[in-house]
Image (cartoon, rainbow, N blue to C red; front, side, top):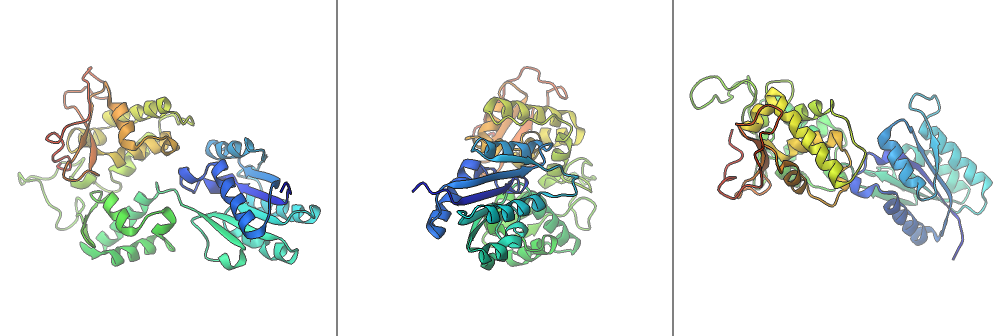
Length: 383
């Protein structure tokens, strides 16, 4: 059939909350069209609109991706009294009134937009499909709900908040359900499933950044410098002020947030090609070699791949769209630099980048680095 009876209305900014792998326009539209055909017997897109503050580079890139699919791009400045939600709602209502052939409306936006027009569309005999990052609890008002996995990059900060809250409560050994409760206290409504993961998988992945996950269900909170019971160096002297085990530095922030904050001074790249991303990653490593607290960690226990990628995400936020794993990007970036990639053979997920002690701060002396063997990476987690 060649009937054009589907309207699609998109908020580009909402898609930035979704994981990069699921936010591509072509993929989103395939899911919407399949749902419309299956649920509502609608075929062909009649209305195509995407709204964005085009002064925002990330949102503009999403909007232009939809523009390449024939969508009209509507610029809605961030400071405007008329919000993106207002524009989408008005356009949906107008389309439903003017276009009698419109049978189905699909809305890609925060759930407040589709829910605000649900009653009007249903009274007019139209079906409503919502495509929402993370889902919505009010799906009963919708004919179909398409859920996009949330971007997992903020998960580290959520977990860090939960760890800090447990540490402040003097908890050092908790079970997964207790940790989940702490997560929900700092982030009401938090649900790992919305990020395409489970609490256990998340704890396994982030273990070593302020806590230790012990199979099958225990979480050991690592003491922070200055807290009662924190361990001193084996020599009996005070710990080095810049870095201690597990990547913690003195309050108020750890290495992961320090890396992200430091990378904010670097120019961002919107290109998503291997050369640009590797160049951006090298700039992050150069910066880490210049900053005293990052350099000390890099020369000592090494920077975890997660800490390095926290900086990379700032300067090349779409790097996950590449068909390369972070480890592969790091291997390409360290070639010809004083950095070495170390991998713990006893804990394969423990990957660290270590800076040569002989290197000059912020500059390479011509040493060539590569991926270490098993013996070289046998204990990358040690300080």
